[in-house]
Image (cartoon, rainbow, N blue to C red):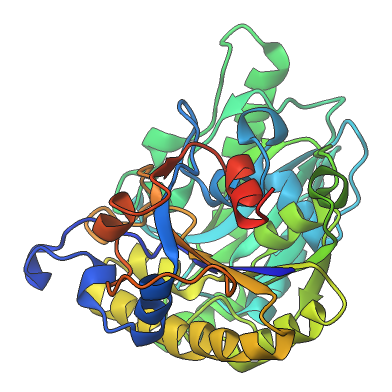
Length: 407
């Protein structure tokens, strides 16, 4: 058998008043997703273990069959793997957003979805200007970049906050702080990052790129905001854990990083942006090509989550329609190419309710289509139908992968 997991990032939601108290899944026309739900088994998957924050790093690592409570060292080192940042065993890598702060309030976690070209120029500029021992900046994709610290000098034992969790709030209330107020290295690290945030503002505001963006009415990259630091991950290869070789396809460094840590091949698709203008066709073609020689493909679509973070439910619905039309449909129609031996799982990694514009921790709906085990139960793909589905609640991603593979 062949296996593919289709991730509609952040698509799960809460009931929305303007949609007659329906969720995004319930209110959006998704004929192909609903068709699959009607001939397949559904359930809920708990992607965020108790006591952990509902970040994409935690949720996607769960869905890939790992246990974040023991396997996750931080988002930063996973993204660093994808970006090709050299890490030794002591180095600490943080995710480093370019963000927009206005009058001390975080207005945009993505600096107006700054382009990759603009973002790289700005991060390389900071690298050339900020000369501190053990401190280096590395460019990533769009607003997502990497801050690497020397672990012999600094500590990962600090508390940080994702900027998308605190939109329209005063950034000074969410600056890094040591987990242990008596840990000197952690105190030093917190103070360093606070200083870097301040220095970045002084440097970035005068940069030509920001001046041009401002003249065009776009949000500028006014500050950096590092978060989720950790050391290089060491997890069991997917091929050894589940006996399958595979690939990961995305537009997001984090997803590639989890895949690389798991020994999956990263497949980079030209024109993959992580936004509604992403190259859907290219991603599907790449997935089908990989399935010719691989057992497993993890195909991740970011756009729905990005729209959810704006709080605009109509934009989120449109992004879900695109997922249904341009991802679910062609993958489902291609199933016949694999002689009734392609299993398809579809699910979000976590909810991103438009009401709060950030992630929440409820279990997510999933469907597993097995061409050899079809059922007949006409229904819509939704949180409610998944809750009443055949699989019930699956407590962790490891069991989910065993369920998918009939192991």
